[in-house]
Length: 571
Image (tube, rainbow, N blue to C red; front, side, top):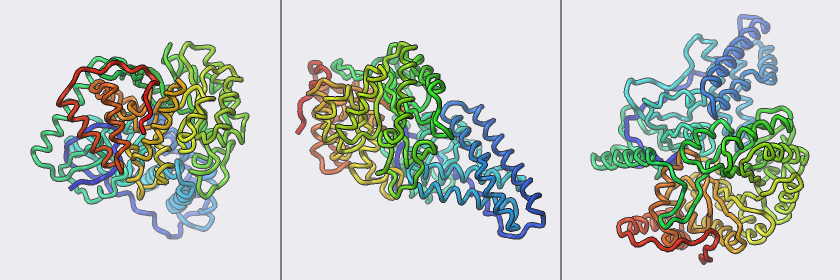
């Protein structure tokens, strides 16, 4: 039997299942024998202790994991949460019950907001469990230790647990809930952990079941045969060998250069990305500077972080995305108004234009950092839909002295107008996660429509081809910075569609580099044609896989190098 989900990473793991223990029971609804003030002291003590513990864990973890744990610590210490608990204690309930209800109310609020904030609801559950455990004097639920390597199954995994996973014991991770942008997925990528999220059928897996977790193919295979296990181990060994191979610039078999860049959420991951062969940064997400702030960070504070990133890649390209926030990631100083459908609301560049000083300050900080370093800084605007928005952002970036300004193509309208948009933008970068969401009308945070969130969809690929053709005609670079670029075979197709660079999680670089080196540009163009001609995502992948296998089994002389941005129209 096979269970479907969303694969994180390109790896494969074989092992026995161990399930995460059930959460602590909900505190009883019963009157307290203590006064509200006494219960308040208990609640404050427990919340403070959990906040301090999470902060220590954050300092020990560092990197993205540390940032997530620090955010959780702030949740436990949130004054508005303490105020809510105080109100509930006045009704005579216990501190346990008041804290549980307060966290539940906050959780419901985040869930209703949808998008990024809904993904943070699970973080609140973890903090709530830790506080309840503190009251009870028991250990908070955590990752079990069966004494042998295992594949962990959980409803979802708390950031504190993910950050402290023993990678010598945990072979892989399967979650029933969660999506590709959940903290579980983010931290699994950072740790190069084989994972499958949003696998609803995983609740049927029992302790001791042997499975093959195949993240590359988005599935879990139960009760595998000896032959399937042997093939999986062979794939594991081949992947490990690729990871140890000498790092070289990304290129096709015929020598066509395809720079391979890293997606980063902060400067902390830059050294690891460079060690894995990142030739620069294709997507630097700046949200980490803003999301936990009550007020917009100053120009000086931003400049420090941008300089850290730029200094890590001297002489190399670093593409910085302007703040991508709004209704789905509400900020008090930007836009925290409720919207019925935040994915279609005031977000990205729209939100920045409504609060232009925030955008101006960010561009000012970037320009100062650029002047103080020798990296090749590019800036781009998120969620661009029109030519007019393109002109606005590019002109503003140039006003601050930033030489290279482009746009992200995440909305179908931007792809369809790419020939006009690229007359004004210096480059385009395709965000396949959102482009797939908007093309297929499938919320990428919603598990019930996860099957539609597939960048192999010919509709999505046709839009990528539009952008590639426009870039070729106008001599403008076209990058791909969505997670589609981390799928090695799809990466070859994207190059055939006109992508001139690829950016991904650093842990995927070795696999993509090796696969690109197996195919010529002529072969990449042919694979792209096959994918575009398919009727659906599954058949596109099947057709491309079959033809790619045939190419590898019957190698021919490499075709001549096709210069960048000279790809012909594909349809």
